[in-house]
Length: 630
Image 1 (spheres, rainbow, N blue to C red):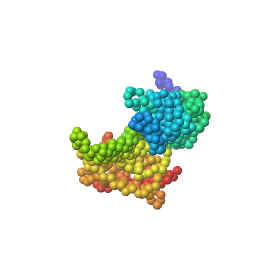
Image 2 (cartoon, helix red, strand yellow):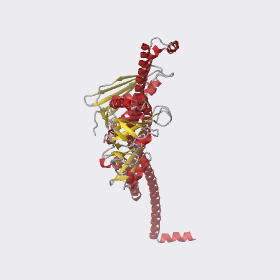
Image 3 (cartoon, one colour):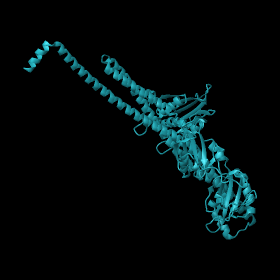
Image 4 (tube, rainbow, N blue to C red):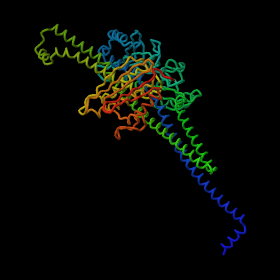
């Protein structure tokens, strides 16, 4: 009954019926708009959260990598000073253990030490100090050094490089290297042998240590007082008082100085002279000093500008997408056109996200190569110290052994008829063979230590993987260093023959480039060549040919070819694509050649081309300008 009455009423009042329908459909349309708007908002928030998270992760990785480069430069300066001090300490320790010095007979020692000062050409003077602190030096000065740090620590049995002081004899700022002189009996030293060296080497290393404009370095002694600093007024010694950075009014600098004195390593941000800067600091191992590098904040964070620009573009695209979606809701009649625009924008966002993922993959690879560089540099450093010690002492050992042989020959000439016991012993030892073979043995040992030092030098040169600045380097040397790193894969094994390296190096001038990154390109190309040869060794012997030349257009050409399995046309077209690899899982991820392409083309404004024939081999041709176009 009620429904019939409603129908009759609607027929009588058609205008009221139309208003009801209009309100109904208006309410339905608003509900749909709100639902679409809610979907758009949720999607926008999700994409924004993903983009912001990815941006923060990539920015953090990039910033950490750049900060690690500054810390690595500081470590390189520390290594230079440490190696220099280690050699000086070895020289003094060797002299302190010599027969002449252990005699403590100054009339005998003095000419010997004078000759060593001239021979080594590093020390200003040398001196002998007995346990009561009395000292006599090669300048014939008599002093009491009981209050000096070098005497107190060496008489306790330590070979030290003391804090720099102004020498009482030379009146120059110098470092005193001292070592205990072993006594013939007992455990306490019979005295102390000291050598004074100028601090110029430390100042030179600190002066050359920088990263970008307005950066500088300094070195602190064990009390936090500068011993090398661009501002010479801040440098202090026991004779010339200067304020320790531990007492600096800049509380942040004082806090960091406390960590440096405690021999810690880190890179931190502080405000210095009204400007924000990063300070990278690391301690020395051969002395109680620390080295610090001050880098303006903009030098460290300037590479992030490109990432910030990318984030701004991405944010702009996201905002445009949101506005477009909102307009689609408001302008229903244009929904298909707006849907097409949104589809285009989605493709752009997808492309941008893919590029961001590629950038992230490259950063991860760069971080791995940076870690490899630090590992190689660390191993080279640890090998370098004992190798230098052995090499420095082999010369003395060779002289001593020759002196003994000369003495033995003199005995034979003076006493041609030895006792039967001596004759039997000489015959058992084969003295003639020993006298002939011992110098050869010492010479071969010296050749071996020189080879070790050469390998260490190559390792340290190759470990320049994260040097950020362009510099002039020898391309041929970079290739040789890379080949030395890969030598274990080139030598013959029970499963494969030796891979022959044929080098035809041109007479190249120094090339301005990113040395470490170019070494990474050589490494990636050579590793691929070795892998290709290993897969084809059943057919022929492996051979890699390397040729370099300089063109008339001031371009350097590096050609690396192999006689491996070669590439098909499809593989050749995709060899520089990200994440493309023909290697089995676990052996390659498809980043090596893509990163090589970016380093050559984007970083050096050069070209890299590949020519390959299946079954015959592959040739990569790299062209880079002699000088930077920047």
